[in-house]
Image (cartoon, rainbow, N blue to C red; front, side):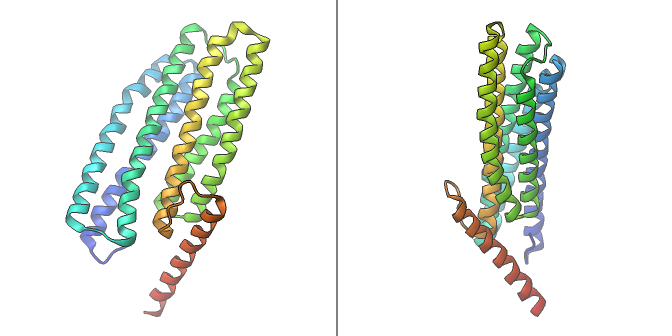
Length: 246
């Protein structure tokens, strides 16, 4: 985003950089937690838990940036929406970090019993989908791409479907081999954590559309979201036309 005030631009850019840094850290935490689970790596799982404090510290740092920015600059219109979106988005990212910690804890529990990769296919498949969804959400925020954010929102339905399918598959494993019930329950908690990460990624995507269009699309149907994305595209085109006519 570009503004008439260079100092405001710098302040906002600093907050955005911290936001994206926090997002990448949380994304890496999810990836490492899943690696710890799949490889029964208790050391890596412990490192994921220990690194959660870094995400929490970034949340505090970003909150301080936002508070000072609002106090000094008193942003309005789209600038204010952007600042509010960063403030809300850090909450989702912090919770993604929390879900990564939950996965790491489950990885430790499973590794204590054995290193058998029973039922892992369903978990790994959902993990891959969710991590792509999170990566796309962060990228759409970085470049303020409302259309890409809309695709992230649509993909959340696929994640929800896969989550339910994975739960059913795990229940089938339990019925076939009741001795695995403890491990399956732990994996169900992992699936739940992954599904929630997908929800937080969707929330970040909704914030992108809010910034771009001015429409709060939370709890909205896809027709409403699609119209907001179209409005965002029209606003960007009008801005480009005005710039070219100057």
